[in-house]
Structure formats: structure tokens, C-alpha cells
Length: 364
Image (tube, rainbow, N blue to C red):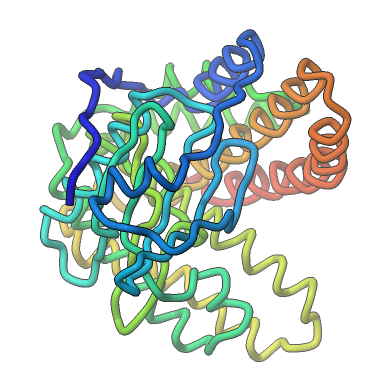
């Protein structure tokens, strides 16, 4: 297929100070003029694909992206992802990562085939992939299937990390301490003491470092016929602690299961089975990443600390989106952002307290 020429852009590397990065990115978006990027036209899609299309419908959208379902005249289906808030470098990098991750040849991992790229419209065209997200599987599928898929998710993530390992280095506790201090939360004296003790312990640990997926979560993984498809590969060269990806998947899994427990409070037998997903994910990861970094003595503390960092990042993201909606002075985005924040912030505060309690239990 014919591809629109790709601009020569460079994606800058990032560190493991994720809370600060999210705050800075959202502040930068707020300082810009509102983006009025129009949707890709049928003629642009046809030129990029090199064939006729029969229809293109808006399928899903959020504050950053628009997703279009494209029906080709040949009968095949495709997806067009348009990055509304971002830049050319993000689109370029994500397009390249579809191919780079596929080239690793990891058993059980599928990447949508990259079809074309339209830089002026910041749009990636890729094959349409059938399957259920892990969220959908958790809600409507078998608990046994979810446990098996969680183990497969751990195996695949470990193999990605093996391919991306650059060094085994001391845990960057000073960076983590500064980043946790940037989170929009209030910590009690006891909570501050627990964080301080955790960082002091982890200063003795060594961790695997290198490129990270950044957003390896249940909502971004499709399961179909014993295969997982990563539908949202990295959009920048994120570099840091590999355990971040592991912890972020656990955080997303925990939030997903908490929602199920609230919706189906009486199905306790199924809840017990669903909780086995955490053990299955860890088993899959550790079995494939056989040289465990950090070592077992520090693994649980490091995992909880990075889960807490993820919660702080979520708080910063919600606060940033609310500030962005206020700056845009548009009624609908402000209403949506305010409603989201009013419901999300209290839950994130509860999650923060729960994680710090768990962190305290993990301390030797």
C-alpha cells in the first residue's frame, strides 16, 4: 500500500519521573491555542491506503484521540487513529513501534499491521483486529480465561523487557522521591515516614533499566484465540525502570477488579478466582524474566512504590485535564472534566491510602 511520506522528526527520551512529566505536558497543552485539527478526509485515506474506501465512521474518542472505523471497498476493515492533542513526533514514533514490537517475534504477541501514515492529519492507519479487551473479558468472560490471559500478559511483558534491557542499575530513589513529592496529594506524617523508609530500603536495590512500554494495561490489550494484541504501543521513547510496566499493569488490573466487586458484590466465589490474576501475572513475568531485578527481598516494596507513583500520576492527569478544560472556556469539556474529577479524585485518594498501608506491610 502507498504511504504518505513521513516527516523527519525526532522523539526525545524521557526519564522515570512520570508525575512531573504528565504535569508538564498538560501545562504545555494548556498554554497552546486550542487544536482544531480536522478529521482525515475520504480522499486522504484512499490516497494513503492506495485503494477505495466505502465508509469511514467515528468509532470512539477521548480528550486526546479520535478512532475511526474504516471499511475498505475490498471488504477488509481498518482503523484510523487520529492524535488530536499531540505532535507529529508522537504519531511517527507510535507508527514505527507497531513494526518494531512485531519484529521482536514474541510468541503470543500480535501488533496491528501498520497500513499507512498521514502526518498532516496526525493519523495512523492500521488493520482492524478482532478480540476482547481484558476489561471486557473480566466483566463478561470466564474467570479461568482471565487468569490464563493474565499469565500470558506477564510472559509477554517479560520478553519485551528482556529485549529492551540496557543495564542493571541502582534504583533511582532520588528521582522517585522528587516525583512523588510533585503529586497533587496530601500526606500525613505517618505516610511520609512510610515513604521515607521505603526509599531508604530501595536505595540498596538494583533494577532492570531500559525502554518501557509506559501504558501496558488491560484496556490496551485485546485477547483472541490464545493471542494478545497490543493496540496502543508507546508514542515516545519512554526510558526508566522496567518494573514500572509491571506495576502499572497491576494497578490497572486492581482497579478493574474493584469495579467488578462493586457491581457484583454477591459473587464472592468468582471474586476469589479473579484475585488469582495477580499471582498468575507475576508467575508469567518471573518465569520468563528469570534474572529477577529487583531481587525478591525488594520486589514487593518496589512494586507497591511504583503502583503508588501510578496513582500520583493519575491524580496529576485528572487535575491537569480539569485545568485544561477551564482554560479552554468551553462548557462541555469543563462539565465533563469536572464530573470526572468529582468522582475520580476521592477514589484515587482512597487508593493512595490503601497502597501506603500495603507498602507499610511490605517493609521488613
